[in-house]
Image (cartoon, rainbow, N blue to C red; front, side, top):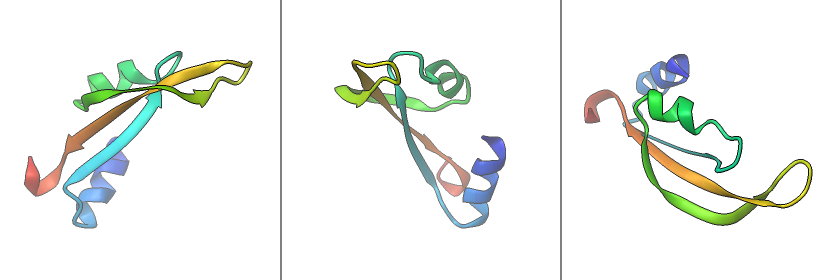
Length: 66
């Protein structure tokens, strides 16, 4: 992820956005990397073994915008 941030900065980007599943997603990783939670969209995605899960939306300012 740090390499992705570096590449984004090298290409003039100042804001990253991403989302992850509410159930069994990578929320802990993104929280630890400094991304800020914006909110949750309920029942957004299908789980691999059936059912629905929400998605957590994140953003992080990088580069010159920090």
